[in-house]
Length: 468
Image 1 (cartoon, helix red, strand yellow):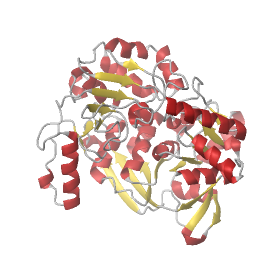
Image 2 (image 1 turned 120 degrees about the vertical axis):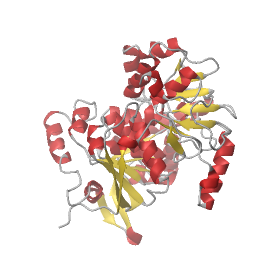
Image 3 (image 1 turned 30 degrees about the horizontal axis):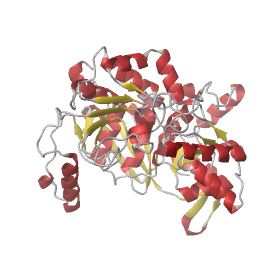
């Protein structure tokens, strides 16, 4: 019998039925809801006459539309307040656990759920958010779903899916100084392109993966969707089990030992085969910064803006020209030294405690440059409180950053946190699409340390020149 991949094993364990047209009906272990979809789907289900099938397997929290302003209340952002009230009513009626404003468990769902031990190896996880793939860092099969699929999962605790092909991306080599997990995945997207993963689920493997912390793995898996892939996943290992031990929602005592024994059977077999393979030498990667309006528009901080006239593909050439026009950049110019107006540190990509620690270490008593507005938005209430207990918030405040409440905030601006047209931002988020941070906003994706370098110099800067 041929070897199985990690994906094969999880998929097979969750197939409830094979359906016509090549579809499978999968059992879903965790259903995560945020405020944009929670209330509307509870209402939709009620109007259809259905009840939530397994309320104990659904968890809800406000993150997208709530305000990140210090001292916020439910209605600081009126639209967010309306959505939160709807989610509160629906969750209460259905018996679904809601992590509300001020609760220890509140935050961006892809930050808070892993912290609480809700995300477990071998599980199937769904959420109506593109970056649900983040949870693959634990060896979970995590799938982004649409609004109608949310209702289906709520009503049946199952999901209809076409089985994707499977790709392995091997990350080998030692990272150079100043290179973070964010740099590794941005460089990977830049080299392979945003269409490379179309039709695939991706497993990340190789020596680097085994060396990454869980929080670094979450960052890598978070951007899997930017490869065009269905999801991203990493094999669970001792780092995974040590992280989960003692988490509030993780198994306890003898049950935890039994769970670990089962999780150890999940990694891909040595003789497993993949539909596609790619290899990245991370030793060749420098700190990254995006220049255009797609995550694949990325280059080393020492690089120069590419010239579309050198691009042989006509469609790609046209998209590059449009991106440069939107971003207000010229071919051949150095990216380093480009003036910035905003710096944003946060999101489900880089809003974790380790991200804030690394950013604060670069600050080291320095100040935000005159004319730059800089925000730190912790990814969860637990991150915020832990950072404050370590005094990280004071370092940011003393430097001139704003220290805000947990949520998605300026990642997509659904709560009104946006940048003015034409202003330039260095952001630790996952997307630099046209208008993503506000109409006409110009977004450069980077790591937290690179974001701090921009904040204190007032320009896109090489963090290594600051001693990091």
